[in-house]
Amino acid sequence: MQIARVIGTVVATRKNDTLIGSKLLIVKPLNSNLQEDDAKDIVVAVDTVGAGKGELVLLVTGSAAGKVMADSNAPVNAAVIGIIDDIEISG
Image 1 (cartoon, rainbow, N blue to C red):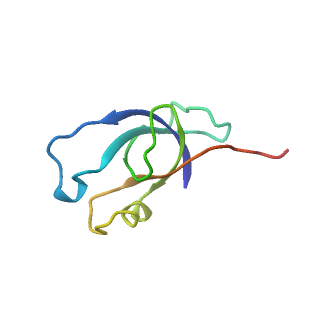
Image 2 (cartoon, rainbow, N blue to C red):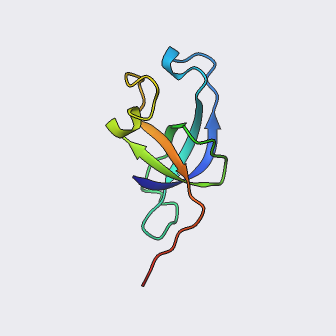
């Protein structure tokens, strides 16, 4: 799991049938200081929680992303699985 910020959306009128009805977000993974890192690429992720632009989210990639879809065969490599309300880091 990674922390990322939603920076935009993608509209695709034609897409794989397993993605119909899914909202697609553009997210930017954050570094350990919770800052956007130019070394990290943006990611297009399926939104499973109703996140919006500017929000901090939990992002999963790889095989874990496909598991959140109703159809486990959906061609998904990244998914937003949570909206972060608060982060507390000790020390």
